[in-house]
Figure 1 (cartoon, rainbow, N blue to C red):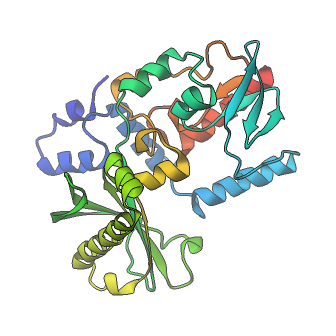
Figure 2 (cartoon, rainbow, N blue to C red):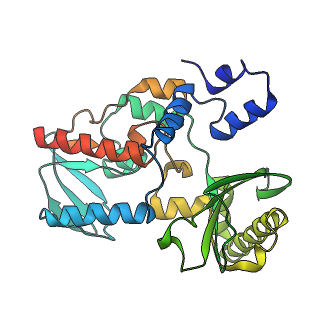
Length: 316
């Protein structure tokens, strides 16, 4: 299975190579590149109006209409297993009995905290130890009081660089603009997000040891990004009304992501070949779903894995 780099080396144009590497890192499988381009060009992938929140709201409404009950703000402390079968969940001291569990969350947390590391999953155990993950990121978002006609995705070379950790300087600004989505901002206003590679340990340690400095560096990062974008889109910084910065530590606190990997396992050739099993040895009634069960992650694959898990649970 070819990597993106092995495939791209056949081109002599440096511009073509740079464009491809801008879409997909060189170490990933070229299959992931073809799948990404194929779904986009075939009209089978894109951005859902309202974002992920609207997708989740529709799922919630459908689930409730079928008689389901949802308990938000209820972190699962333990998946209860008796005689080799799931019998319930513990959350905040309460026990919820059940016939089956679909774990659509972080797989490290599922295996080593909620199951206490008592049950083996040969593939995931090995991959969590050694497989390449999506690198942690900082997401810097701006609410703007005007529109600039920025396309959904735009990348600028940034030779001066933006420092996101002591040893990481980002030299490309990847902007995502949501002007096309009416729910993303009030009328005649807009929102823009910039994603930048960073390091989890740096931000996590800083937050734990010096929260005031952590907050100050988040503000400084937002200012540096706004300045860098303003050099390329004049008037951008003056238009900023709202700023939000999510560091890798934010991703861990809110989404409980293993090593801050925002999309799970990277789609390397080895990971793609793994075909991760969606059950755990010695635990009947437990089904795995979500982006950690399909290298490359993403909403489309996560939703499909959820549908597959429901079917498996219904079969028992």
